[in-house]
Length: 213
Image 1: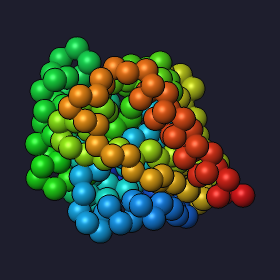
Image 2: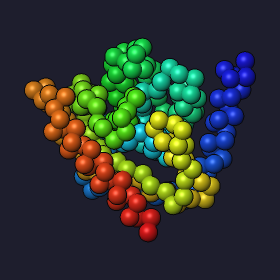
Image 3: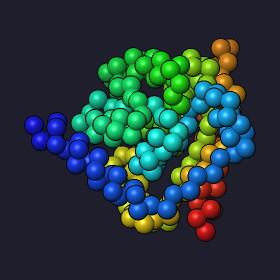
């Protein structure tokens, strides 16, 4: 009863109060600003560990994402929905393909997608093919992004080393220029695509950190 009904509300109010204190700034590449103005389909692509920073952007960026069927995943799912975002549920072992198709459907309804591209189980900072499959299915542009904060709590015991900016921290999010959609003839498992995206996300993370100085 507590975990199913009360804990999600506690997590929601805690996150809202906590993030209200952040001094958040976002930088968008001019190409992204133009793509958003035209209403193009976008996939915001980031590393695992940055989710707690990015959650606060669900409302202004009209985000939909895939969430885990685990107990912790359902807490995140509740928060996203309270922020007027949308979710498609699945995991690497149960419902993963259905969750991807559900996310495509949500994007066709007008949402932008957000995806931790080194998931669902890592290894960290190793891009998996899912983001390229989603880009091809949804005819969506991939937007490399990175987040940084002036001071954070790092959950070292978690596999993704999740970071939660501390109260009153400065938080900067950097959005790089969008890619063109992945074509039907492109191989989603092409290592060159993965290396290119990993490099672009690393640069976005570096830019976010530099803007904190």
